[in-house]
Length: 233
Image 1 (cartoon, helix red, strand yellow):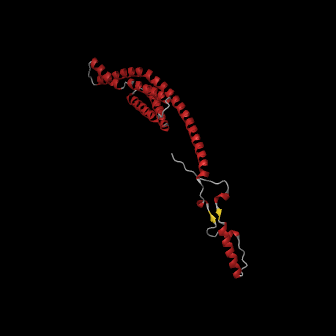
Image 2: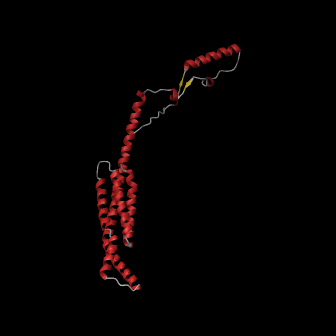
Image 3: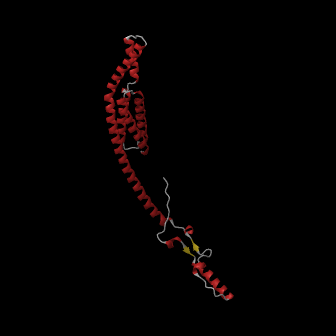
């Protein structure tokens, strides 16, 4: 971590120094020349101050570290204290937001978990009816056992039971990680990535309108978590 210290004097007079000895030499020399030339032109101080070397500006002033260091250290400690306080407040706010979103995800996941068996059974029935309809239109018959086998294979591809279980596990791990005292930013990012992956798989496998609505909400909540965890160390 690096700090930049900028010195700003409280009085304008601290910004410069006047070389009085050189000023007197300029003045004496000008008076002498004025007398020799018998000139009546007035010598003004503002003109003398513009002569080379009279004023040493801020850049030429050298402040000893004995004067600057204590002030700089005090300002640094104050700034660090404010930073720690601010980050602690931000951490508490983020933690509370994470817990609220996690609670919402648990509720949505519970809805999906309860709806999934009904959706799967409905999918079995509709698929079997559709296949029978298509076969009857072509005048083709199919052994009932074979039909059920094919229906079961297609239905298995839409089963999201494992994704639900894994997402539930990731969500519990996410909440447990929030209570750790060590830096957890990278771990939270990894967990949320896994949660997002499971929600995407669920979305691609589901063919139920009721399920899809809840899954879309899950994806939206996980995406919000994904945006926020990047702010955690």
